[in-house]
Image (cartoon, rainbow, N blue to C red):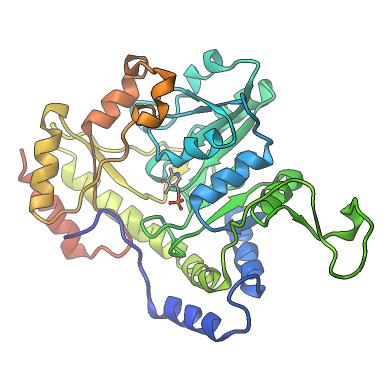
Length: 372
Ligand SMILES: *Cc1c(COP(=O)(O)O)cnc(C)c1O
């Protein structure tokens, strides 16, 4: 099976992890800071690392102080972690439909979803293609809301020349093996707002305050540390940071290959009138995480099965999040989200990752072209 997404691990990655294993500290050691520093340079904003993309979202929501009854505005076409982590802090999830072409949240539909309880607009860079960040940022600023960007798919992408991570109030990343770079499990939170970043970082480290100038209790000695707000343990260990440090050096090479594959599939499929291709706006440069094609919905299942039967590892990204039974209390009417419903009913993600060989992508393209 040619998987739709997969990690790319080389000898340098292995060496880096081996060295970390032979080091003094397996966690809370110096590689955490090195990875954070290197990531900050890459994404253009101070960054802290955490144990998953889900943890990163949870930290982002904790940092903006989500409380019971607050609302967040999110797109349905995403992995449900975007919503689950806010819901776990008591947020009410408000869905806004997506753009038909990118699958990203549609900025034109946001204003009418804003209420006095709205706290944040949460964008997802579906498939690696950045959302309409300038429009979203100005809506958020005009209404006194935070813009959070779930960039689980898009590390290495740029928007109007700026790296993803440097634009939203808080950006979250995932380093799961199918994503654009991996630490096995892992994630990161970036923000140019030092207060938000330090609150996120504390939440990921049990809420511990170790800076003497911030102590509220009497400082009894060098062992003293205190907790002002409860946190969790979302630390990323040095062993995994070692992999991240090495993977990050390869990010541009990964992006180059992902974009080559994007260009190849786009050229191969351009005259297939039954197949709709993903597009890229002129002002972005996507580090393509997925290659989402859209096929006639009445034949989606058949095409999906045919591809899997011929060893093409396909996936569907994603079932609209509001359809999950966890949202049953919301009594959401799917007809309010026609673009998301249509997107989901026709989508298939075909193999896209940096480790695909020319032979493999030629084989995938030939099989896709023989389907209809
Ligand atoms: C993968 C993913 C997450 C969660 O990341 P994990 O590292 O798997 O916890 C969140 N949002 C989106 C859009 C994702 O694709």
